[in-house]
Image 1 (cartoon, one colour):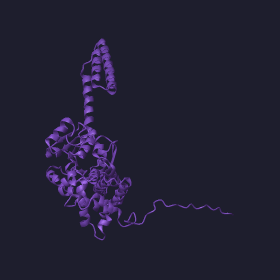
Image 2: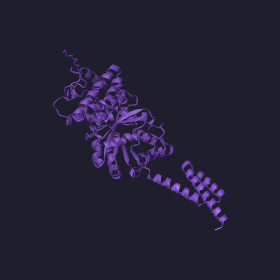
Image 3: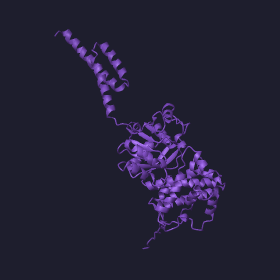
Image 4: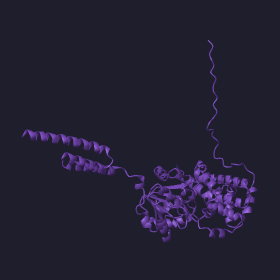
Length: 440
């Protein structure tokens, strides 16, 4: 080899080392693969090097990025596919929450018009008409299409229509897919709660949860702050529900007392009818407050009798939901009671409403439940005067004013008449012992 050739080879090796150093540094610091490629190409051309080294470096870098993306865990928005059964106000509200969190949501609706309205205009043509739904929310009329890839189902169909609806849906529901139920009430005829209906129609192979609390659909849909409770025997499902639904506008608490949460959600609607009648009669704030308080005691007494925890009824699904339904202007059951108190006929009220007031059917079912399912060691009408009184008004056996008058003339008794145990002192007073100095 000539000396000149050796010198040239040495220079080329040094240039290759410099190019490799620049290539490594740029790969680590430059945010753009295209920028890195163009820089390396220009440097290589100026040094008289072939273009293979930069292309290989770029290819290796892109392969690493692709492997990283493939190995990264899926985000919740990608892994969860939610189906909402029912395109009413509450179903839309649930879809709106999840859609804002970028979850893909399908709403099963009844009509082609309802489907087209949501898919084209992102609004319902019947319920919450002024609320715009997120782009990730779609609608369908096809049962199979709605459920074929669902990982979570939200049941938002009124109680009295749920059994027939679930019978039709059962063949399409994915195996083991959990269900979160938002319906509240007692089924007429069978006297079943929603937990019974769901298990009878969809089986026991899946987990069920029940969402309740002071939660008007419109307020949820427009993003006003709301707190609810989700009850299930499965901690996994309640925690999953809290994670999926939870956001700065929607707070989710968890519970295992399913029966307590269901009883609270059913009875509060009946109490709201009574509160509305009291308001419609113009009896004043004192009367409404007193009636609601005594109604909450009847709710708690019933819950204890069926094995629920009394503390559950002091939470969101009990007094919380009762206060919202009895005093909130958006309450359908309260408005039903107000119109009854003002003298309107029940048939006219029901026919003029597009949404279901669950308290009407629940009030009649509750009385039947108390008479047939509860022990008869005491007079039910004295133990549950408000629940019985509302049912009698709805059946036309007495007027709202007569019912309120009878409540005021009931026998005298202690305020809380169902003592389950003696009170337990949680914070007993402690007496500090004085230290006595010994005298030697």
